[in-house]
Image (cartoon, rainbow, N blue to C red; front, top):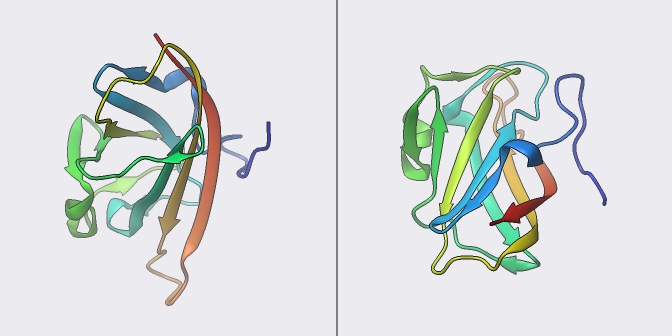
Amino acid sequence: MARFFKNAFSDYLITPEDSRITPEGLVLDLRLPWYRSLPLSVVMPTQLLVDGQTVPLDGATVEYEGRRYTLAELPEQTGVSWFIQDSVLLHVPTPQPLASGPHHVVVTLNLYPPYIPMLTHVTRGDAHVQAA
């Protein structure tokens, strides 16, 4: 399986052993693909594929330190820092439950580091996540 992300803190953008598929949708454990902590305001999930099919991010939320933020709320979170050794959970509802078994999940995450104007750091990670 190809991997698109690796740094000194985590081998993967998606941590498969801590991600899961529920009857409501996906809960993906994501690691920060950057060399230093960043505010949540500069983080944006932009695409999700499950078994090669696009899953809309409508209704998706990002959970960090016990609080959930809609994607529309992320740009306002300038005072909430995602630390490099922490995970965030990306909750994505699906219109119908996914079939039992493994599913190939690909997430694209954009970062806009505040100290590098005009940079969009695009990271893609993939994993096989098991549905019950």
